[in-house]
Every structure is written in C-alpha cells, then in structure tokens.
Amino acid sequence: MILVTGGTGLVGSHLLYKLISKGEKVKAIYRRAHKLEKVKHVFSYYSEDWETLYNNIEWLEADITDVPKLQDAFKDISFVYHCAAFISFEPDKYKTLRKINIEGTANIVNLSISNKVEKLCYVSSIAAIGHNNNPETLITETTPWNPEEDNSVYAITKYGAELEVWRGSQEGLDVVIVNPGIILGPGFWRSGGSGSLFNQIYKGLNFYTKGGSSYIDVLDVTNIIINLMESSIKNEGYILIAENLLFKDFNEKAAKALGVSKKQKLVQPWQLEILWRLDWLKHKLFGKRRQLSKQLANTLTSVTKHDNSKIKAALNYNFIAIEKSIKDVSNLYLKDLKL
Image (tube, rainbow, N blue to C red; front, side, top):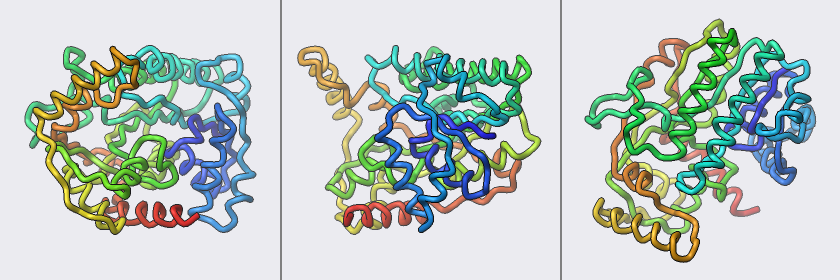
C-alpha cells in the first residue's frame, strides 16, 4: 500500500488522482476535513467518474508532527510520497516552519525506517538548491548550498528537511528527492502558490519585477515522482523544471490566457527595498502579517535558471510546455469562476 502525506495540497491531490487511476491502493492523511472538498474538486477536473475514484482513497486524520497518529497511518505501507509542507516566507513563522518541515519530515523518515518502507519520495523545492552569482549559469543538483547566504526561512527549513531524508538513506532507507520549481496547477486559487497568482492576474495585477524563476506543470511533477518510485533509482535528487521564465513573461502569458489586460509596470529594486522595510515596520508596530520580507524582495529581483538535464536523462522525460500549462490552468480558473 502507498501512503501520501499532504494529500489535500496541489501536488498531493493530483498525485492521489494519478495513483488511484492506476488502480493503486492508497492511504492519505489530512489535517482539516474541509480541505477534502478541494481534492474532490481536483478529481472532477479530470474525470466524470471522480466520485468513485475519490472513494477508493483510505483517508486518515493525522498530523506529521503527531507521532502516535502517524504510527497508525504507516500500517501495511510499502511506499511513501511525502508531499506535506508548510509554505511561508514570513520570518516570524520560522518556528512553525521548522516544526512541520524539519521535525515532521524526521518523523516520516523514522517511521519509514521502523516500518521497513521500501522507498520514500520527498517533494522538496528549488528553494533548497544552492544559487549562482551569475544568473546565466544554470543551477544544477550539485550547486552548493551556502548557509551563510541570506536564505529565506522557507528555504532553510526545506534544506533541513532534505538533510533528514538523506540521513534516512544512510540508515538503510531507499529515497528519492525532487526539487520542483514554481508548480502550475488548478484548484487552489486563494491558498498561496501559483494558483493565487492566476487569481491576482485576473483581478488586475499589473506590475512585475526584474526577476525570473523556473516553472513546471503539476502533472509533470506527479508523473515524474511516480516514475522515480517505480524505477530502480534510489538515493538521488532531481531538479524538476520545464522552463526558465522571467516574471514579466509569465505575467504576460497568463494575462493573455485569462483574457485580461497585459499592460504592466516595472517595480524597481529600490522600490522593493522601501516596501519590505515598510512591511517590517507595520508588522512591528501593528502586528500585521508580513507580506514582503527582505529575502522575498531579493527573490523577486533575481534571475535564477535551473538545469533539468539530470531528470531528462534519467527518465527520458519530455515536459509539458509552460505556455500550454498556463493556458490549461487559465481555462480551469475561468471555468471555476462560473461555478
């Protein structure tokens, strides 16, 4: 049997659909019952018989930081897809990020070892990969992580989680780690991630920054991790990206696909320097949630380009074009607006 953590998230819900469609026996854990509705909605994008497929999942209420409940989830499990994570770039959320991303992952690794799980896949992030000073130099799996850099709290905890997974590999657990770029997929329009970006662009987001990043379709992520888990590959890490794209270009393509204005204004780096300081001041004076940290401002003005040659060679994989992914996600967003 297969265990999926983070089954109510973007990657987890699409992964569950793919596994169940293949006839696999799957157990998934969730923390909040109302989020199960999002999984049902994702299933409805891809099948008219979505309810039958959904009902084949064995759901278990648990939290990756709650070891006693997790122990029940690991009964009869042979393969684990660890997709659960807390995503935040707010510096004051560091303790929560550590507890969920690092300690939670350590729990998953320890239970996988004690229950003799055959293989574990950990879905990390390109945030946990090192950086190059030259934006034209492609970042690879061997680009070193520099702990002395001003890394975001999210990146620090995802890197720490990877260390726990590699520790598991040293203790005899077969593992694979994937580091996806910005994952494009439907169904999560207001809960952060790329879905909320489509929502913001549709509602009039008309500015861009000089930076750029790496993108991948959620269907590629799920296909690749299943292929890796079913292969003989073990104790390897892979960057998962389809294309490198400037934020300006992404915004323009999404605006076109959504049928809204493509006019954009450039936010200069010096303006972001002022904005993140004002954001910090509002947090200190009035307790407002951080919207723009120093590290996030730096990310928005940096161009990072990642190399996907390792995973392409390992699986002979062809990625979905990002322009197609943007169109497909936009069409589902517009469809959901009519509901």
